[in-house]
Image (cartoon, rainbow, N blue to C red; front, side, top):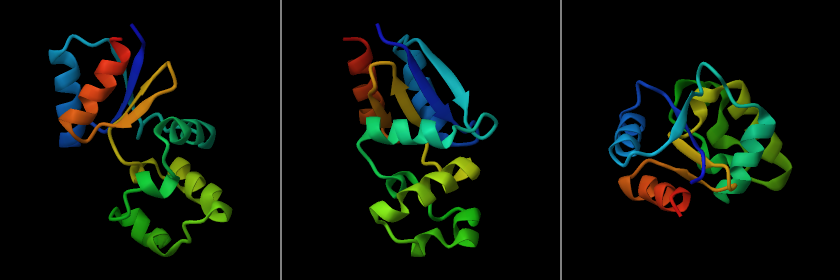
Length: 125
């Protein structure tokens, strides 16, 4: 059985739903309150590789800080990729949630029951 970590904001209903499903399935996982314990740029880069996504794919562009930074206007190009990652590290509220990672190098954005079940299936073999 693989170890899982879930990045949550306790105020987020999608995060609470994902945690409830993990608990109902008896999953073993660690909770990371990523607003209190923000991931580094290197961790975000690693998780993006696991997700197979780009930083703009997991950026909450409707957040107030996103509007202040003007991220919606930022180019979505390889040259600008690090700028996006640095913004996510500096402003973790911009990170889409919840993100579930497993120590096999897989990850999902667990916003749906289906996505959470995908993570569970991977970790339970």
